[in-house]
Structures are given as structure tokens and as C-alpha cells.
Amino acid sequence: MNAKGWIEQLRLEAHPEGGYFRETYRCQDIIRADNLPERFSQAHCFSTAIYYLLEAPDFSAFHRIKQDELWHFYQGSGLTIHVITAAGEYQTIKLGNDPAQGQSFQAVVHAGDWFAATVDDPDGFALVGCTVAPGFEFADFELAESSALIAAYPDQQDLIQKFSRSS
Image (cartoon, rainbow, N blue to C red):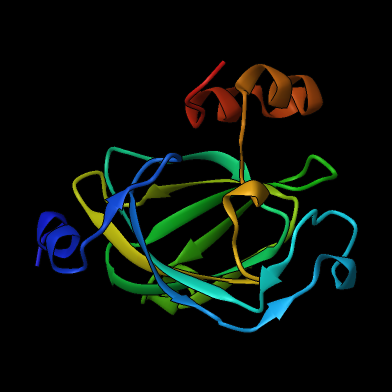
């Protein structure tokens, strides 16, 4: 199946960072805000999960969330997650089904790290899943402004400009 087929089959919607998504799970159990680390300002469910599809040449723009995000590879081409750690180090995570090429079926982006994603095949797509605990809330999501991110991490300027949607 091609990207359009998966988007229709899974009823995916456009995501602000780029690509398409649909939440597939939201735990009904809640953690009160006063039982969470200070970086969280509201109650959260225990966990959430989504489908996420990215089709080349589109990219997932630099963003960060307040939780660790566990990525799961399902279908399509390999995917590269571009990470700028809090210390300013650039790292890549390769998702896919070819361990001989350094790809993993699962990988974690740590809470607070800035990250973007690209499809490895310029004519391909990647269908993945993302699991977040405590559960994702859009209040936890921050889409990067490239000028602010460049000011914080000037050594990563070219990368930030390449994978940002706002100045």
C-alpha cells in the first residue's frame, strides 16, 4: 500500500509538525499534576499512542515534548530522527526493518530533546507509531522557532534551518 492508502485506511490527519497522525490509545487512568514532575502543569493520563506517517519529501519539523517518546517502526522506508540533545549534541536515530543498516524497530527520543524526522528514501514514506508516558497533551508540545533554536545551538544552524517551519 502507498502512503495515500495508509492515510485513508488509518484515517490519519495532518500534524502541525508535518506528516499525518491519529491517536490510537489514551489510557483512562489519570495522574494528578501534583504527582508529576514540575515540568507538567496539568494532570495527564498514564500513556498515549499514535500512528504517524511521514511521506518524502515532507519532514517532521524540529519540536520537543516534556516526556520520553518511544517510536515503533511499522511499514515503508527507513526513517531518520534528527536529535539535538539538551547539551547541544547532534545525534541520529535510524528506524526501520534492516538491523544490518543500523536500523531499529524501536527507539527513544528523550524528554526535552529537540527532534525532527526525515524519510530515508526520497520517494518513500514511513509508517511508525509513537508511545508517550505520561500521556501526550498538546500543552507539552513545542514547535521550534528556528531563530531561537539557532541562538541556543549555533553549531546546528544548517540542520535547524533545513528542518524548521517557522523563523
